[in-house]
Length: 252
Image (cartoon, rainbow, N blue to C red; front, side, top):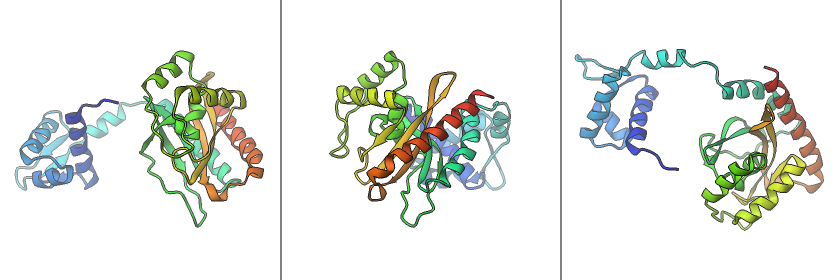
């Protein structure tokens, strides 16, 4: 996915100033964001011009204005806010039955992203970055979404996908992915046998809005805790809770 590097740096500057309480000096921003001081001044000046920052002439620091709050106030509740609000209660109930990591995933352009996570309470846990992006065809969460894309959407995804081999279980060809997705679509669940990280497995089920795939519900666990005899119970429970989210989402 191509991005505009300068735009990303500008957002990094804004996020950094927000993270330290809304005040910073030029050299602090330059160091934290790894930008030359001369360029940092340009980013700061642009944010001032757009109304996001105020420079205090007395102490020379840059402060956040109320512009961000004003922008936030104009944003209505989004589809993904509804999804997270509904899913939060459902995954709490699910974790009372299966005490592993439970996540809600969405397809963000051509990558899979977790937008909600409930951490396992077990002593040995999987700790992952909720803001990280993952190749959908190498995860249960992603496959549970890809299987229900339209024919054209799936073709476009597979044309652009990079079939990197992460483990000896990774699907590395479009034909192999298509074959597995056929089974996922038939069964209404996907399983990851350690395709992205060898020691981590997952089971996922799709979530729909008006019969269109929107997300997936995933249970993620260390491979050593998995038993084949538990798969049917996992699948049944996860599918029931994914269906619960779908029902509530469509009743809004």
